[in-house]
Image (cartoon, rainbow, N blue to C red; front, side, top):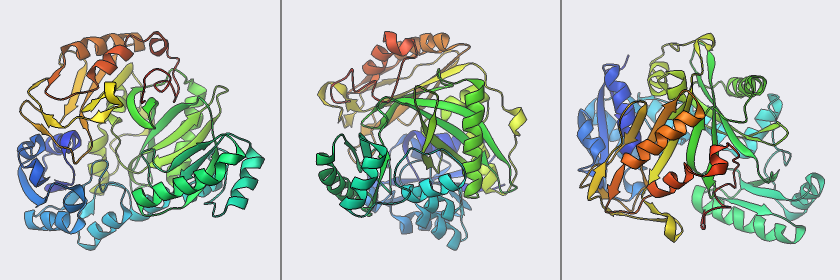
Amino acid sequence: MFKKILIANRGEIAIRVMRAARELGIKTVAVYSDADKDALHVKYADEAFPIGPAPSNLSYLHIPNIINAAIQTGAEAIHPGYGFLSENHHFAAVCQTWGLKFIGPPADAIEKMGIKAQARQMMIQAGVPVVPGTVGAVDDIAAAQKVAEEIGYPIMVKASFGGGGRGIRVVDSPEELANALESASREAKSAFGQGDVYIEKFLRKPRHIEIQVIADSQGNVVTLGERESSLQRRRQKVMEEAPSCAMTPALREQMSEAARRAAQAVHYTSAGTLEFLLDDDGHFYFMEMNTRVQVEHACTEMITGVDIVKEQIRVAAGLPLSIRQEDVVLSGWSIECRLNAEDPEHLFRPSPGKITLWKEASGPWVRVDSGAETGDQVQPFYDSLLAKVVTWGRTRDEAIERMRRALSEFQIEGVKTTLELHRQLMDDEEFCAGRIHTTFLAERIKGA
């Protein structure tokens, strides 16, 4: 096992990784930008190292500075968390070059699954259902028109690289296609450095279901059930739950088997998530694979008792998984609400500033993963996630009721947040009945 690891991230995920490391007896190194010198993750770590100015491209995304921090502090491995460099195959390869273990999948697996059009091709070959569309990237309007006519409108033009809802356009008619191709490609080029796009059939109101997998270098691949991530705004997740109301034992096994085949097809190791769309008829389709630990991993941990981050660290150290598939039992229900420093009343614009009051929820079966405290400055340079509130109940109704209680206890002042939005959602009749889909929030909230 490692003696010391560096966490190449900030906020709640940095602290989450440090907690797992501490339980494994591993020392931790935090890195921080000039803006984060007094941040909670810096205080929590065993030691901390500066990596540059506030802008992320000069600090948290600056590979030479992070590698230097690891070498200077004697870290043996680097955990990237999520976001930033977590799905950067070049960073994973550079770590290996410098004799540092990347706590994540192999660089080639990240690269293969990061190119979405290529990932589609691999999933087709592995027998995993995909949404009808182009096999690879589409490079001219004539080819795009031909595919669109074959699968029928509406369609989606999607960036081959990247994620987070960028480089995506919904096209309802042939007249919109040329402009959608151009604008999606332009946005993808700006966001990810690559302008390739591909085409998929657009499903109007599907559910977003994901299967958590974890695999080791001994060939063991374990699935940990599903999460429902249908509550989104502009294709960014807002709330998650595990399991899903739409799931049956038979469907769960089918989707889990598809996820196992997908992981095996790219010789995957570490934690990863296969994301699918599920229609009203019970048909599911591969969307993409996230080759990292996800924000919403806590839901799965709550219903399985498996510490996903610990398993990541074990696998990176060359150890086998501590669990087998037959050990995985789904128990109860878990809900996770993301508290962001955003103003829902003004189109969810970011709300940087000083937190004048921070009081977390607590009590039985409530988990709070946060990276903030009273007096902190919410920076304008980074993602706006402040905390995740996670509850568990024996049933979905109990998990919802417990979340109502937890959200009523949580207090944040000084910046605008999504706290009140989540309180309202817990009382929404349709949500409570489990009748949700990917456009659920957009139909209810301006700007969502």
